[in-house]
Length: 227
Ligand code: ADP
Ligand code: ADP
Image (cartoon, rainbow, N blue to C red; front, side):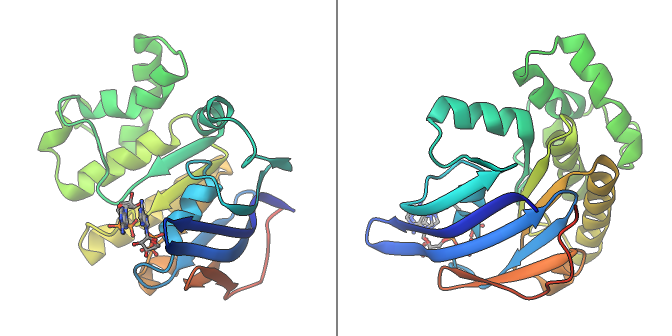
């Protein structure tokens, strides 16, 4: 059974149809890559799955519950409690230290600062970031910043991690390392990953892949949906 699923989702921006009936189902603990050319609707599909955008038609389910009909407050709570996010350029807060950035989702969930930082710190050793805890994130290299962003995406132990071109700003070696860390960390936590990428080498890290063309998704590999 699917943990997160889009059924026949369509969405237009004004006159521009971004999705024209896309369906996708991702199982618990599964790494799922969404590929396709620029402008095909990948990010829009990810934003619909994540409860950021509301489709014009179609349905989105998380853990058996329909989420596209929830109000903004409930979708926001769902994103905070069950989802993590990693984007192309990390999008860290440059004035904060690396460990403060990682702790942010925990602070948003109401944890106190000391407890949040204590939970953030083990991620630094785990992701090969030892010694960078107190560095201002504006001073990190691209690969370091993306690993910090990954730690921030996983620190609250989300059920689903949404990653939109997480290696797009990195050279290919660093991108491979970030992908390995992302997949290992998520598998250890049992987190599902929905990964948007246009790079086949990045998608090769996934358990299954779909390609989005012209606002519709086609499954490329159909081996398994993890239970
Ligand atoms: P991809 O992620 O595959 O590059 P997107 O989902 O970003 O594709 O975009 C799909 C289509 O929707 C494109 O034509 C894009 O220009 C358009 N689009 C995406 N976001 C917006 C927006 N906020 N406003 C207007 N058009 C948008
Ligand atoms: P990606 O394909 O990774 O989403 P883009 O550069 O296409 O990257 O989009 C970056 C941001 O701009 C997204 O938030 C997207 O929704 C928005 N966007 C994309 N296309 C358009 C557009 N034609 N008009 C307005 N906003 C857009």
